[in-house]
Amino acid sequence: MHDRDELYVLAVDLGTGGPKIGLVSVTGIAAWQTHVPVETTYGAHRTATQDAEAWWTIIAGAAKQAFAETTIEPSQVVGVGITAQWASTIPVDAEGLPVGDCVMWMDGRGGKDVRRSIGGRFGGYSLRSILTWLRHAGAPPSLGGDDAAGHLAFFAGAGASTGDLARWFLEPADYLSMRFTGVAAASPASMCAAWLIDTRVPGTCAYDQALIRRLGIDGTKLPPLMPTGSVVGTVTDHAALETGLLAGTPVVTGLPDLHSATIGSGAVGDFEPHLAISTTSWLSCPVTKKKTDISHSIATVPGVTPDRYLVVDNQDSGGRCLDWYRESFRTAFDDVPSYEELLALAETAPAGAGNVVFTPWLAGERTPISDRHARAGFQNLGLATTGAHLARAVLEGVAMNSRWLLEEAERFTGRRLEPIRIIGGGAQSPLWCQIMADVTNRTIEQVIDPRNANLRGMALFTARSLGLVQQEEIRGLVAIQQTFEPNQEHRATYDTMFEAFTKLYAAQKKLFRLLNP
Image (cartoon, rainbow, N blue to C red; front, side):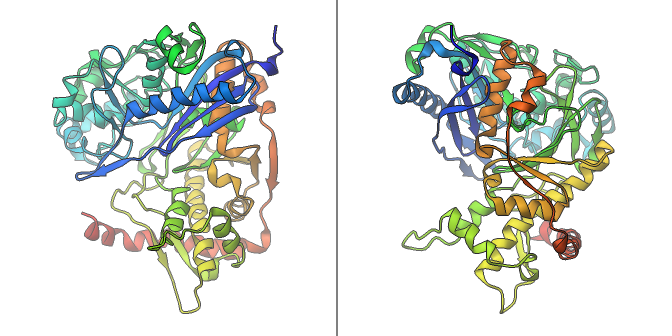
């Protein structure tokens, strides 16, 4: 018999930038992990795809590598847990093999098909459609087509040449679960971005046929639903051969990264918030009731337990802003500063970055304003502006956007959200954490190993699903690495900068539509 700390989960966190794979103890301690980048292919007409077969090849190889590089035996792995970027769709055959590329969460080709099905004069929707979706699912599909509902509409419409080949349309986490088990299955959590489940009663585990008909899709190609936290199946002989796992190892239902981040942050109690600075950014917390704020694109989705919901909102550019700024230094000689160099440079600039404001809407925005046309920019540059000012302005601009979201999230929940646990690659930086505390005027708690919070969350979720960890243990299993209190000396500076930040969007809204039709 092994002690609990000697039992492990093969955890997978499939982000937009590629999969992380880890052997993580059932108490959330990573013994081994790796990350392999994957490219997104962008094309005309808002196309964004990835090769789903490449994901499996990477993950299978990494699992074997993990066993080769550690003393952990396959017999010590009690389960497989998969979390992934969501609102993406892979068309697969009856065996779970892709018949086309993964249509990513930023792919908007289905916009015309969605508008054809449910479009109208009420905010772009027909009155009956928007009322039905708000009442049943909590939010309507995006008219831009950039969610799972839009992808399903695309495969039933303009993309039917590929859609007709598919037996199932799967979210990334569910696709990978099927590669391990051979079983096509999903959960209310993993399918929440399809907006096809009636969430008025917590724990509902069935598709809403009225919504399926209204969207105009074939409901028989949706994966069967299982309760969140169920065992989908076990590792097949073939998957065992490819990964080095033991055949028969349980695989639990996959989770969107929002859900695994909630668990991996330890903020699992009612109204306990976490903030992610990953490729994208969001602020969420568990809540007890279904609710929607359509004007600010905030809603609730099925949570990590059947009796709770999660606040869902998303800002399309978070940590990717620093990636973009770093890449902007690239020259013909490929001289690119390291993240450490950029952060050290930013730290030499004063709070407020010399009154330079960076608006981080590189790919448009979703929350608290929904505007596909919005774009990023530096404002108020002068001859005295330095590279240090620009680097710090990027960090502060992302924090300003988070403050904008926080204000609406607190109105949505009806309470002050504090302390805020912070996760993601951006949360590794003490400077960025302090800026977040100063700009939002909230206590920020940096959890241990914030970059791998989703791997930790998936391991804890898998362990909880298998009865090895209790829900009430989870917060205490996630240690706090450092706490950041707001520096009140910066309060006036950041209040002024934030006022300018929000006014810049209002002033440029028409310009964005002119330049980005």
